[in-house]
Image (cartoon, rainbow, N blue to C red; front, side, top):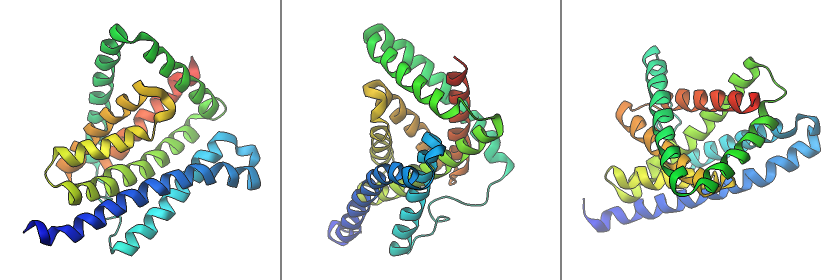
Length: 229
């Protein structure tokens, strides 16, 4: 295929990436307002859920506009192998995270301690007042909508824009990392690295479920540990 014939597809992919980022920003702005108006008692958990609902709804509209289904993004029927792969990814992510944290602590200890303080506060606010079933359900919901967006829509459109393997993996992972800028510079790097691991897994298994399960387990374990400290 010539460069000229690929141009419209690349322009559409670039536009879709921009629209997806605008959707995330809009969801982040609208969710607190919706919760404050309709369910103020739900607090931060309500904000997280509302943000996810807005993102899923907006993503569904984007996909409908482009003639793409959630199945086409990798949300295929799950199987037991996906659970095992998700657990494997969880172990890999935690191992890589420990090595990264130890390395960065030698150079920039304040960056690591600052990120830990931010996510500890977040963990206490989210998981401090809920039980294990609610925590697992919330973690699964977050894993579902974030993976559908990042490793589904963003990764697919990045592949259309850039082609190849590592360019799309790095671009979608960077965008995913920037979505966690509230954690500071180290948090952006950390989540981008996690995103790259999950993106490679999605491309290898042709399914979002291993990444969704790993993401949900990462969130659940992290929130539980942070809330318990």
